[in-house]
Image (tube, rainbow, N blue to C red; front, side):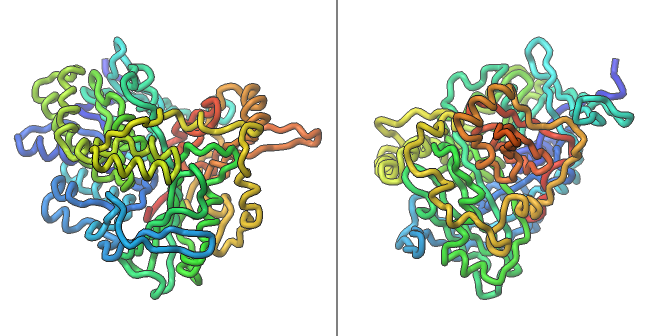
Length: 551
């Protein structure tokens, strides 16, 4: 019997990012072409579509041409077309411009976008095609029957921080569907759970992540032209640290800048937020931002392990798309077009399942075939070992990557990928100079060019209901104190780009963890990088979190 707190739909898509919305639009198009109607629902945890969406972003727009009609495509919000594309190698004071483009790194003719704006636009198109798009609903639980996914349950609300039900308690709605498509983005919490329960990772390597931190600035007219693009490598990184910066000239005298840092670093005091502030002090970037104004700040993780790290992506009644699947092409660091492609492949598979009323694992396995026939495999397979070999440092990794260009990705002695949390060394095992000592003279921020974490979070628009159970769960606080604080020096206080984690020291000198969950920008770095996998990230109440507008 149908309960008033239950919904039944044909297709449920969790996540209104590029992958989820592309799935919905593509499926709606196929249904219309065949004169069929089905109930398609998209649910997103953000207060409005786009508020939790962040990317660089330069996009290969061919996939959007395939997805959208000519009129829909022509009305896409575009921030610029790449007219200049340079790669800079930075030293602490100077830079050298490479006289050539590195393989896969040429962006001339590609489009610069705000992905949050594009997703708002795609949501409008989806709604016009009679897709139901609901925002402000977070989902923590998957509903199973006979170990098969059959639905999801929205998060209960009206519970105080101690777990006590308040007068405004509302049990989360259960949504059942014939087909459920997870499109939650990087390190999707539901995808993580279902991969573990259904053992979907059995034949894949461990996923590797990076953390991207981005700022939007308004600058002087002469600072940078719309469509100018710069990528940087070198300073302030060293040794085996992997990453680099980006600078994209936007419309209306604005610039998007950011730094992407591989999370397989070893230093327990490494601070990606501080690293970006240090990078901004380089003369090339500093001069560009002079007399400018910070307008927006945000951060997200990126699954960059590549083809060999992609798990099984289908099961009974279930498909996984986009960043939740791990579709990011390295070294180009591009995934939006692949996310869109995966959505279109999922739509094809989903339509066939609807047509035949067969949502079994075997029936949905054609999703893998569609992916393998698409640009997803074409772009990811030849660079399948890139991220693994680059963990050996720029020189060794660069040589092996060069060989891989000739051998179509094959590489001898490719190192095994391991969880990023296992890369972090204990304090007494780390023999190099700690980050906090390496840059001791550059960690005071002037709140004009450089900003501390609390000030940065202000520019993300982040807010949370502070009288709810924390969405950041420490599995064993006693073990956390003994190991994560005493042995590792509490790395989460450094790697979190939003100042969520604080080491509190009492009058007796005892250290403990203090969590400022209200600062969380939902990047999920803590779920990935914390030693001992000690912290689990869960979605907070729907509508909580950042309020990105132009990211």
